Length: 134
Image 1 (cartoon, rainbow, N blue to C red):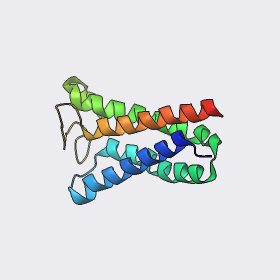
Image 2: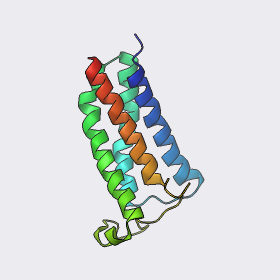
Image 3: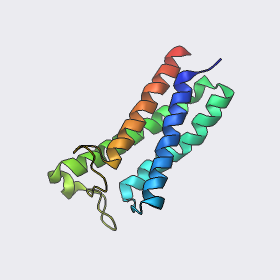
């Protein structure tokens, strides 16, 4: 039986990974420290969710939910650093690219951390639906 929330979560994680690779490899955007942390959490989700969908493993939420919630916290903090200038004194990016930098700013609010936040939020919602359907 097709588990749509699991499939959707896998597709979102795949698009997020491909998007981050596009921004860094094709567009030449150098990831900051917080971007790397978000990648560290997102990239394994592609494999975990893909295998879980293939096997129809509805217990995967136990492993994915903690990772996606961590991703929400990191990307939310990163987005706040970009949009609230007074938080820059609490930034963890000491070397290289500043975490407050915005490579993209579509419609005045859509930045790379915002996209990451949305992806992690969608994955979290899908995992809650998987848990509920179990």
